[in-house]
Length: 312
Ligand SMILES: C[S@@+](CC[C@H](N)C(=O)[O-])C[C@H]1O[C@@H](n2cnc3c(N)ncnc32)[C@H](O)[C@@H]1O
Image 1: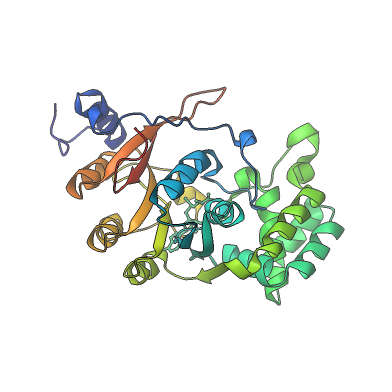
Image 2: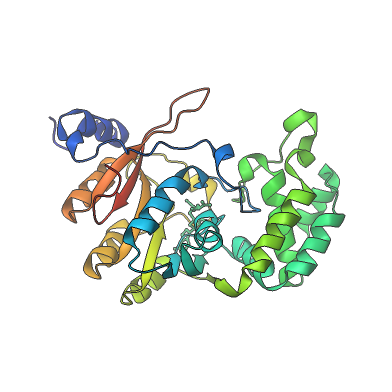
């Protein structure tokens, strides 16, 4: 086995080699397979790059296994994005309340309007028919209030290629059924998801801020479970995080320390990389791998990390 820091070795390749080299006992494959996203309820109106719908069966198992009596009092999602885990936890009665946090101002406007001004947002969604010109005009117009801003985020998210909001993202070209920018704009579906969010708005809260700092503060409470899906840019590698999210730099050591020092109940997901493999070992956490199989290619395994062993 080569030393992790030897030069010329790609971090990704090294991580895979670590798994193959007999240490895979530490990171077995999860007993729960990644589900096809069509098999679980789609609750988020946002199409989120790196969205975690496929992980929902793991989330259910984690929350069920770690609850003492009934639902967890509070779920915190410090890097919320599309918020699918918070929505699922609250809507399935696995958590009483969820606190979603994201640093992205556009994502924040969407969640604030979805939670606090759902009627106005739904009205706009129902009335909008996207064309390239309308979407471009919307992108160029500065919103004057939170509902306009949240609506703009939703439209751009659903009309840009891959749902990417970061600068440089382009509009979908042909899209599904050759419908172009409108190919993922389903007003009825979006309104019914927004309606469901409105029905749970008393149990959902969103904060625009630094998820790491807030997680460090909230982790002193012992009634909170953390779902952690940070943007990840592998050290030395060119990972997707930079292209997908406006905010993509996180101090991963600090994040691991926050969870370890406060003995928090957490579930984290990361792409498999040498840096993260080392952090898991250093903090004596447990990890399993989950490999997503797509029709075109097999993706790099993702790590699901918990304090105790839950998925083997
Ligand atoms: C991998 S995505 C989360 C995807 C989400 N789990 C889902 O299923 O949709 C990471 C998110 O972290 C946000 N982010 C980046 N840095 C942050 C920070 N310091 N504090 C809070 N959020 C941050 C990004 O804006 C992005 O929305």
